[in-house]
Image 1 (cartoon, rainbow, N blue to C red):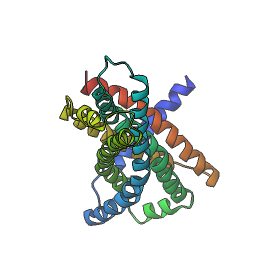
Image 2: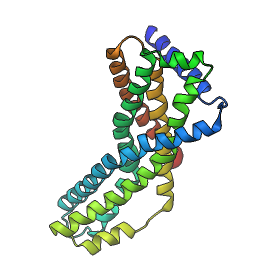
Image 3: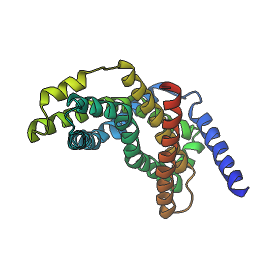
Length: 250
């Protein structure tokens, strides 16, 4: 019972924080500048890790498919098809989001948590600034707008990684791989993946900001808040993935 009460209290506190975040901004021009800054800090700086992981994941999926589907009755183009579907439906949205929860989420929680324990947030409140909106809203807008571009980049890089493996190792004919990539393509799959990533971006940013905003104590507590932010964000992402798949695909 105590655990349930604690959970409900946190949900209520999170909801109240989001109410403050999405209240009317004081000066829109300041928020626009901060959104551009956060797009660079949280979005552009994540391109490298998304690219590296995607190219190797596409290569590994293609390699494993080629090794396990050696039957002469299974056409090789299905390997390219399976790689494309894996990248679009799951990896480039869900798995990339879990990786970003670790990188971006911990960064947000530690940044805002440090501002809390050094009383910078209290100073903003004394000056009459809506600290929640000023600190968190630009991050949410920036990630929700930018992270879907990381999904598109991941899909392109991942399928390219599969093609490189096919071409360099000779494990399958590259033309068959291209045929599989183009076979039975459904544009809605891209839409589904982008919607998921937009939702995941909101989850990562808002949950991480929540734990940072209510951090207390010293730098050790900020570290613990950052860890909790990553864990909770990852769990919520997996739950949302299940719900969105049920709503959007079935």
